[in-house]
Length: 584
View 1 (tube, one colour):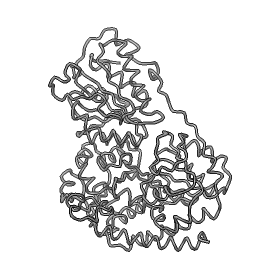
View 2 (cartoon, one colour):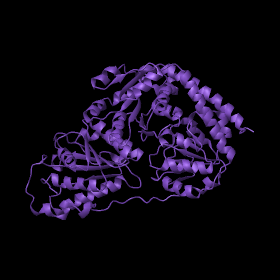
View 3 (cartoon, helix red, strand yellow):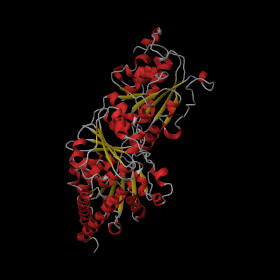
């Protein structure tokens, strides 16, 4: 390996080890101090390096890449506030368990705390939001230094992808030269530390978490079992859960982010998608109480579901291979670190048929069908454009598989409530670790970047779009095309559903905070195709191609229409529940 000079040499072997350990993508924000890191990344054929101007956007772009591929992704930036701008994406990666490798350039020790430009305290800059922090050091160049950086690269990947995956922060204090000016390095270039292990092997093989699994014994013994599946992106897990549901008759309450809302699953299993609407009915909550609940992944957003789970008297077990304490309802009898995929795969080979009471499974299937039919009818009866009807129409109009990235706030709640089982294998992604709206366009672009999906559609509101508008420019620069469906209610639409909306004195200007921004002008300024459809047919036509689809709604009318639709669905669910005999 050509080491170049004393600054570049440690970076070259560090990045060589990252590649040997499976890193295939990197995101670089332009800068002088991190130029050596960027050059070393860009010189490699086995790592695709994406350049994003804004560090905040770059962090979320890298986050979307890592979510989309399931692999560790590098993001690098210059020193000072540039590094601080990565913090929101690091926090999201921490909460969501996404392997992000942050390489921040820094001034060397002699330029710290003496008034040098772009020099801030970067030691443990991201606090407890990273799985591991390391100051790489300014060691004199030699074989031991190269060994140190090779071992460091291996450990970084191991820490990022371990049993509790997440972000890693490597701080790299760099001295001149910052340009790739060749320097004579003598025999060092021929050393094993310079060239790495033979055959492309890592210097130190990264550890991999053991994947063991067993479902709780109570699940098979229960007559009224229930599985609740939140956000998860493990390949094969949705299929394994659906197979178990089919074999045993166990109903599954499936968040859109669970990847279980697919017609091929719903056609063979008791997959319940409308639980958020169904559980608003007091009779359902009382008469369809389970005797055991297994919860997989993050707890879904739905307040009716969380409230119901909190009030259940039966045992509940949370299963998460990371072993994190995700129990906002504070009702879990156990938190299991067993791997759900391994557990369901084993169970699918041994589970007895129809262990659940047939009436239990059939009751959930009947009310799910009633809720879906009622929701479809009620949504179509509302004047266009109605926010949840927009998302449902676009999802029903998909003619091929797609990745749907959903913004936090109202879009994710409307999708959770109203997204039906899809005709194709639609994949849902979202930044639900910390539930923020920042960086959503950047993350969607990152999800599209590796081209491992047919197309990407982003559902977002006006505030989230404005918050991350600079990413529109990055998309054009990088040649990434996605479809953005922006529901514009001129402010924070979700606040109209909260108790604060009943106190009007400061609500409009201080809470809802309408921006008054001209979204059409902003979109066109960045060179994006723009459309503003006026009916469902035009919406589906516009959503079938890249560009921004802009739909203006009114917050108060949207809240009133939501209430009408929910009431219609509850009536239908109550009637269906009576027909099942569950009340007798």
